Length: 276
View 1 (cartoon, rainbow, N blue to C red):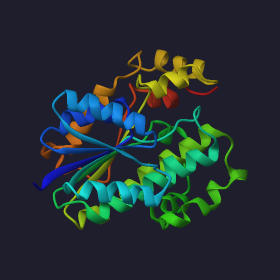
View 2 (tube, helix red, strand yellow):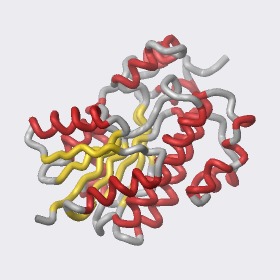
View 3 (tube, helix red, strand yellow):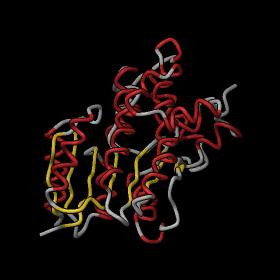
């Protein structure tokens, strides 16, 4: 039977929350670098009545991404992409952050965009970090948006001498995600499909807990304490936004990024989180 297929990359709490909202009646193809994580999430979803299959996938590898897509196509038309894969500044070195979060996301959007079904839709999870770094020049933004994927990591602004630390690398990757979504939305539109991004703030997940316990833990705890919401967010609150973007109610929304951070970025620029 030809099914509608959702590709979910990143077997974590945010991706699973979105899949639970939107994946009913679909084949869920769950890709993660760690097979045990993909299998665990697939089991949780199957035990809740969803039709899910785990696949090992490395977001930093184009062949691995192509293999995931080929596997998904054996079940039917790919109609939905939820990309929640990635690494954080406390989890990986600069090179890995750029290869996974920046290059890998760009490749995934490109490869899925080649085969997404008419009427299809996608969402990729970016981060508030892309909104708080120093503004890039229009030329640099266009480079992040439009440079052929295999040449992205050769851009001057992504060279080691121009990157201060893992947080700066992460900010650049997430800025690239936003710009890439804008450029890819034009191509997806030619297939009658839509793609958007969501930039969450501090969302309580295992990845966030790693950050709370990492070298910048106090920084992050201070951030959510002093943001207007006064707390971190939950995966289901991100899924609320994704549900809009992935449903017919969001039919006029594409090429956009949605900041959902409890006001932390606003506080960073205009409130008590503003750097002194």
